[in-house]
Picture 1 (cartoon, helix red, strand yellow):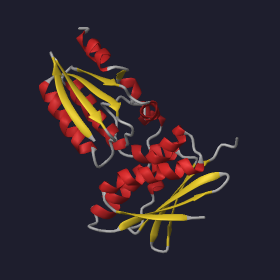
Picture 2 (cartoon, helix red, strand yellow):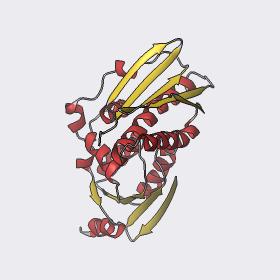
Picture 3 (cartoon, chains in turn red, green):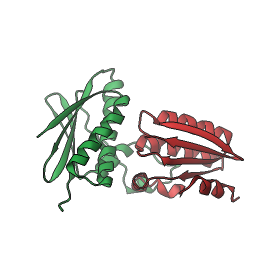
Picture 4 (spheres, chains in turn orange, brown):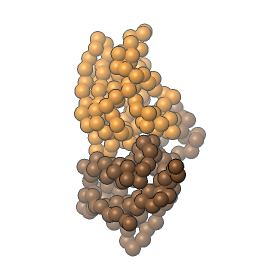
Length: 112
Length: 142
């Protein structure tokens, strides 16, 4: 798994590629924290993530709580059908905005 | 015929474990979604074995994947030598927990919930000094 962080104006984009499991989730979490220190508007791009276990859900939970406490916003991009199924089964999906393309995520966060 | 493959009991094995389960699922002719659900289930249980059964207990050991493909199903068994641990013994999140706001909820038990929810059959037994976590995916008849 690889994580890249880029800034686009006031928005920080966290791009993940590879699988998120209990080996790689700590690295995802560390990068998500770095991104949230930079900005309270975060895009998490999961287009190149083929697999995510509950270890990844835990990181998303941490992100959600952190962003809420800062009154920020988070958008997920390119979430595969299988990962959306998992988010749906666990009731996570209702708490996240999911879009298809990174530019849609940036546009969503720029709305206000 | 039962196939057997062992993996070192650390998180570096998860990648190759999922790949192996994916190969077996392909041989069994499982579709994409059930294949993903099985990989997820096996990953979740293997993670518990590695982190709690082995690492937390200071145990360095392998775990074994037994698998068998029949006309009706793909069966996978994870076998480990950690202390007896029945994943079904703990309380699972119920529908009330799973609709709670993410701000209020407990995160424990999600992995096992996904496991049970994702496979057609899941069972546990402790036999001859080994934990045996068994997963069954039915093969859709065509």
